[in-house]
Length: 112
Picture 1 (cartoon, one colour):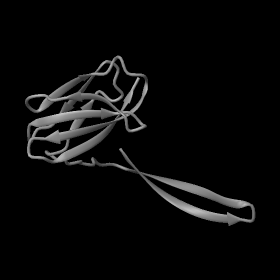
Picture 2 (cartoon, rainbow, N blue to C red):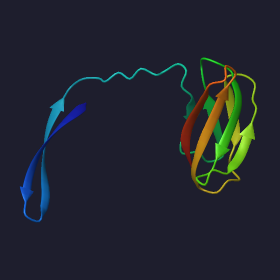
Picture 3 (cartoon, rainbow, N blue to C red):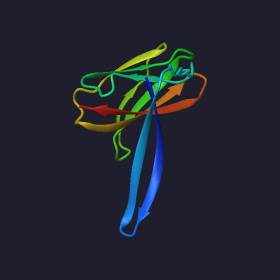
């Protein structure tokens, strides 16, 4: 079920109050996935992060912490890479994936 929200604003002297009116709409929203986009799973990750792409081979996968420090590198063969991250502290990490055709894609994962 999709929900549609209509926000009505009422201004008062001390701030803004939002009145929200909800409508129920039946339907299915289709989302088309870009075949060139990387998939990162599971997210959040515990022990092993899988990086997958269907359109090209992965040349290099780099994992950076929130400070921009490179914490892991992998040069896999094929369209899937498994990175062992169990030793890393909990937090948010950026995944930089370079494909064989030279394109670079990034994603974000949370380590538990």
